[in-house]
Image: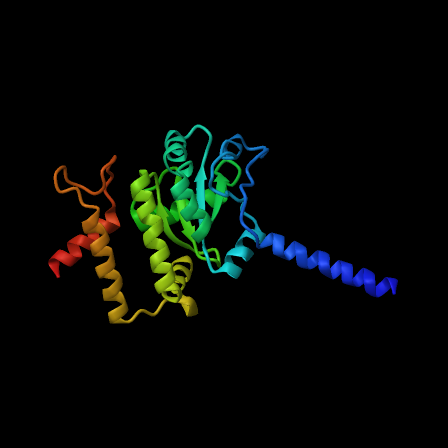
Length: 237
């Protein structure tokens, strides 16, 4: 009887471990050897280390991964921590709908360079904090830099809405971008789908326009080349 009982106990332990692994996320930054990561230990955001288990969980739960990259002496990283990552309402959104991952760029320079390349190609600018949303397969989908709390909350809300409604299309787009738009992974988007995305982008840009002072948003403003090119193309059309 000992062998079957031992096997049963092993199975029970494995089952309980699996349940624990898929339980509520908890902040993993406490005691981290990186000063930048350790300073996020008291954030209400359930920050994770980037590893294979995190991406596997994202795949199981079908969630986007927020890859938030910064470094200890980054001024705007500290500002965004204070304004957004310690904001309990924003933290609740992140913990419920995303897998939040904190990265010290000094520990992961290659990853930082790759995500910066994506931000610069998709936004026309880069910087830190660098917040890149990844598909569960690890492909970058959307990049944001510093954003004030209201704007960052809007980004989270809109991304979650789009992900819920058009997950398959967004996964194709991200995979195509990661592959340079070549080969069998190239996204195929019909005219109706392209118009829907264009109209959604136009609505988002219009909602963020500063009608009094010009530009977009209500904080420090930097020109986004892809956004301006899109608006010019729409105007000409």
